[in-house]
Length: 221
Image 1 (spheres, rainbow, N blue to C red):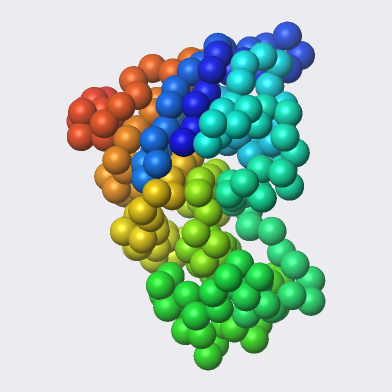
Image 2 (cartoon, rainbow, N blue to C red):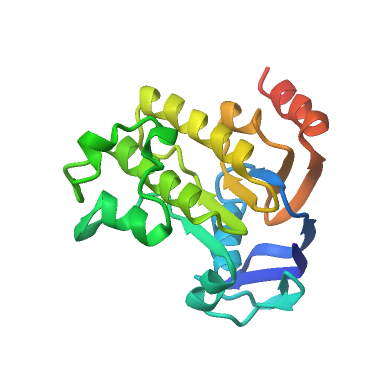
């Protein structure tokens, strides 16, 4: 599904990503983790077309999409969720979910449709509520590849617990669709099929979660 060849990103003379390569098969649930400043968010933004690499290729479903715009990638089946969910003045939750393809999906993320469908996507919603609505949108879209950039950022513990439940649901739902989550949270790492560690712009371990997770948890002791 996704093939990354020798991807490099340089800004102000500093290599944020240093010649990285990896493959992601359909149906994968990959969590990318690593120290702050290791290039995780940059990689996510490059995959979605928000930033352009200095070198390398991004192949998606057999197509070279390295120079494709965000819109072109979205049409091919890529979806992206920012650290801070986007607010849409005047747009209700129901309207957003209808655009995504399913306005009945809210219970999957622990939200009562009667309380939320008519609400606008604005600052009256908490960070946790916005995050779960964003995940509901991803569930509704059934994108081929959904990328979440540090979805746990800025939310409370209760909302985070609901967030991990929603990701577990997303994992169950996916068939040929894949998910990439940028995170360092243990609970999210534990529901991954694969884990990649980025450090100083390079891939360190990358592979089956059952093999890599003990190394990460061992390092926390």
